Image (cartoon, rainbow, N blue to C red; front, side, top):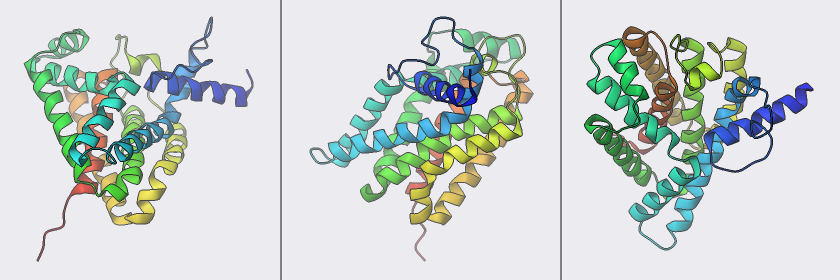
Length: 261
């Protein structure tokens, strides 16, 4: 497979993995090339920005007919349909596992359990509430640029975490499927592909963008250190929680109000 063809197929694989959009090619072929899963990770920030932009677009359209609170709720509902609730499921699983698991084996066992417990239900409900309220608090004229940034940078945080922390040994998961720890060159490539999602917000509010990126990096470092201490690696659910948490941080950065002196 030529380099250009491989990269195109990797892009299609990223779309297939992060959304329910039925695109041909990628892993939807007989005998697919498993290396595409690893190569697709660098495109996550690009596809994530697209998802965030679509969500913001739906919110803007809905706001023509409904109040802002309803429009944002409808947009987030559409995104859950678009992505299959991929990262929301990870939030619930991680809350159950790390909230109810005392030992490494307990945590890994609960992560594999498809049932949602009280920690998972409460954690997901609170995460959705924070995202809904923070998105609604962003000025409507900034919905598109902030939606792009939150979607792109949230997926970028996945790459950062995979560059720093290796996957849990002897465990089948997204982190294991896409290979071992990401290289620095792969992280740089993914960072470049995150730029299209951040240009608009960076031009409008560069200091907020820099603050959001700084908070996101600190969150990756904190979450990664916690994971290494508790389970000695990262799993697919842990990556999904990082992505959702990264989106929340960007939205909170975009919506916070400066104290009035």
